[in-house]
Image (cartoon, rainbow, N blue to C red; front, side, top):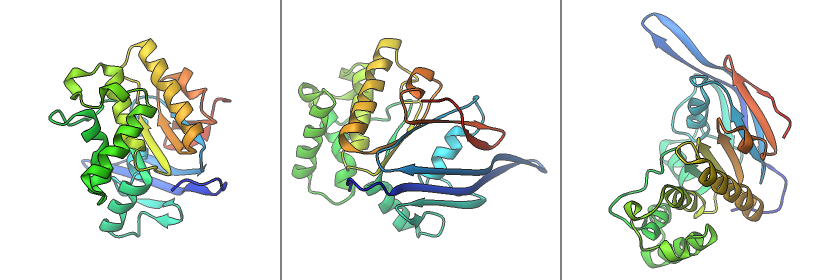
Length: 233
């Protein structure tokens, strides 16, 4: 799905989100704008509760906005059908969370293969692709191990392989190193950066890790519902 052209993968315009607390209207996002080009790495920082995870959910089509648009490869997620949004998520987006969310009863290769099988690829082909991706994240010899048999860093690498196995245009990562010790977090950070270079996949990373943020191409701060470029990368 990735190619060498410099087109915009993601375009966000005037994105708004609010919730109600009783009769009060609580604005989380007040008009967020963001453009992400193919292969570009973006970090989003901000205080806890500022709406960073909410923003990622909207970018990934996991929630709907009150106003504004999210275009992935020119397709507006707000106007696409539910089935089309599901197809887009499966084929064009990858997700990595603070907790790995691996399925305990499946080994690493089976976990990584799952998005491919959901997308309709046969089990044998999916497992072959999964094993290849596990090798790219340094886990060639751990493909048959279940999550309980892996370290925290290894589990997060499996989660990274799962996010990338469909060759998505963009990976959305929410505090991907938040549960790791400092050295393991640094290793996973290095892996994200190197894979982004190698695969030309765009990354949008929500993080409190300023070291990771500074390794991205651009850093934005979410504050009072608005997104602004913040720290020189």
